[in-house]
Length: 195
Image (cartoon, rainbow, N blue to C red):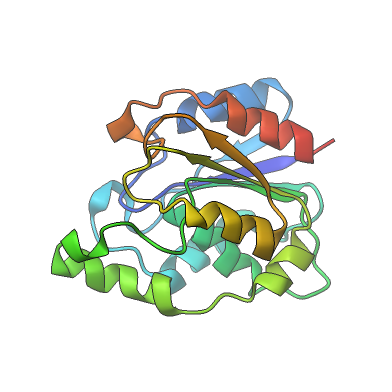
């Protein structure tokens, strides 16, 4: 059975925004869907690379070509940082990145605690060549009015991961704050890469 793991963003949680809707839609289409709570769920603590990767590893078990991911915001990086830890022979079905970032807009305006938390995510390299080998199919979804994600991130996903790029006219960061309760483009992307 094809499995989808939805990885939420910084301080997010499994019931946030469009995640419950996406889980329901994908289950209707025959996927098994998991939306694990990351260690920083509900903003309890700052996101940390190692602890997020461990939760993904424990939740997924042994990934294979029927394993798919949808990441939101820092969840996209969390997936890539998990994938780069896998055996180079591993192949998964693919990844849908939603509002993913490797650079952030307005970082100087963040509170010091948040700037410090973001630092490892911005400065620790990712082996994108390995990630692309393990996940040869990916789609990256962005909006033109995202307050956090620099538009240059789209080019990066296209170049480094070979992602198909989808840029929506609006939608902000595609989270609770932007009022996003449904995200059909993410479901379409999973259907496309899982054919």
